[in-house]
Length: 387
Image (cartoon, rainbow, N blue to C red; front, top):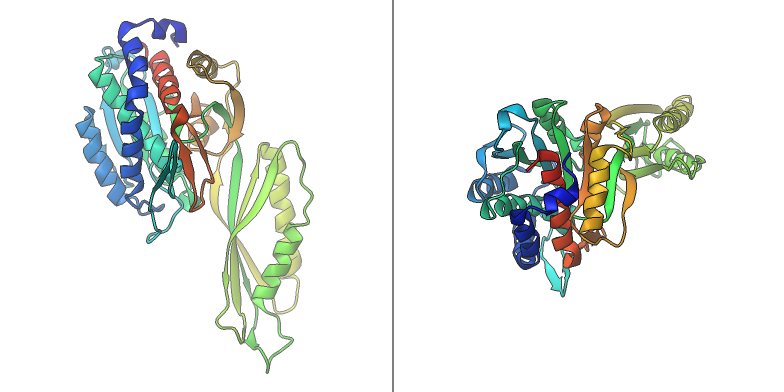
């Protein structure tokens, strides 16, 4: 790692840093262009095709799209055969299903629209960074690979990033970019287990078979039982029932109902305890007459971390301070960085600006810090790649 101060003394880097404020309107427009292309998890192809074209337009080489719709592009290093690459990734998928109204509303420096911050801005940042390296004629020592990856949201289970890490391996340095999270450095990946729990009962007619067990009622009782689980404040541990489905009609006692359950913790041991507590509640329902319960794991985002004293983490913090960030927060989160961190590889996740209401239709992105966020990303990328 090259010290941030040394990177910042390079004349071409200084020119790039000075120019980022002028690029903010372009970056906002590029974010909106990306946001306007639907990209639900498992249906990212249309957005991937657009990004594949844009990767070539901003000057990347070896541009390609894999079978998952990850898009790759390389910015050549001057000593690329002898130095491990730097991977800069941002996930291209969103939580919003096909057909979602993607209308954008501007309110000064606030841009409102589903998926605008998470993660259209992050992907747009890749394009602007690659273009900046080319225009300012900055030549890193190592190859920098830009990757717009799929499958970060929902039940994607980080499948895109798993393919990225499998491709580049342990020697690479991974910088994961989110549209929000400016001022925060995530070097600890929280573990996440996800389950589909399905309940089957005899069901029947709401009048004629009143008293028969209902799968929906039993599911409700299970949710209520989960809601009574006592969780510690530290390490932070959470549960969430994100989706429930079931039933046939208003006057039918449901035969089937299911839910999707998300369990998380900063501590792998505490997560295992939470999983076992939920499994105990499921077993209790299985013991009831005329009730069958299935619990199937559908997601496993592995935990991992590198120390705060790791050079990459330290340089990320120094870059933030250099660009004048009012805060530097070290956080634990669930991002694409989970994959390399869980394998002991060097990785951090950083953000380009601040955003709010993520995963909601009224999501917004605040463009105020975009120039600083892009400056941090440039400095950190060149600190890792060399210049």
